Length: 95
Image (cartoon, rainbow, N blue to C red; front, side, top):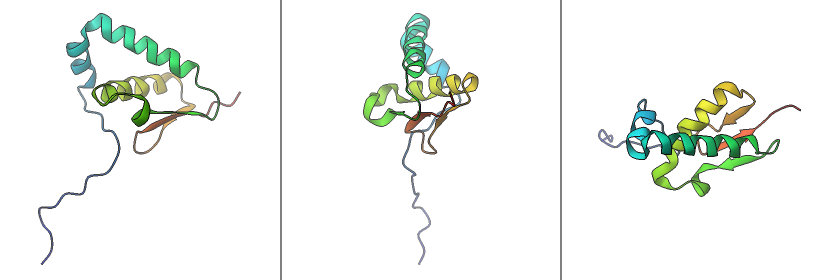
């Protein structure tokens, strides 16, 4: 007999569509904006061909917010990329 109710869960970090609203609710608008600025500054300083390991560096309760901010950063910095499992962000900028 086959397994019908077993779900395989892929490793990695997922991002819900309402991540920003949840983050602002939890952190307040000022706290969210301050955190976003800190993440952007850290990504600006990320050296070429280096990565930021989200799983080992970001507390579990902040990962979705961090991932959402990284996605926003990538929108204006296309040489940065997330791994397929969203666990690392790389700087692939050609300088």
